[in-house]
Image 1 (cartoon, rainbow, N blue to C red):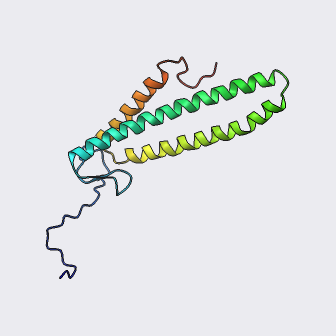
Image 2: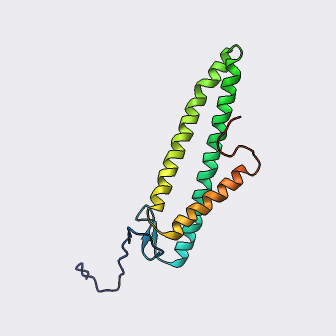
Image 3: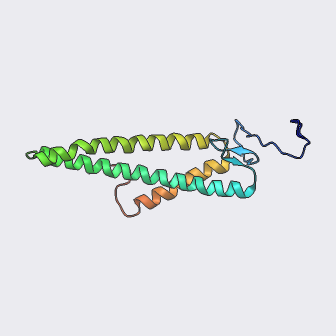
Length: 150
């Protein structure tokens, strides 16, 4: 009969939150207590996921920049001529889409900041590697590198 006593056979895992730069992954929790690292394999899989998050963030940032340039170009073209009703109606939803993409990018960047706040060197490196990979992939076929529209 269980009376709530621990016989020592169960291991309670707690999140270890270090507030200084470190390389320890034992009992590391990344953002959520459910994202608990208990082994080297879990850490390696988490690092791969973080690389992907960095990559995806940079792709989103690049996509947003391209869409912003497209919007600015089309707006400049419209101001040189007459605006038709179809052009006006097409522009009503576009800024809302750009705002939603910007909000998504902002949320994504704050999430990556929280990931980096583990102060784990490997985690921070994974973010940087993913972002660099995404930047290279996003800008390899384009001259648009820093959001310039001309």
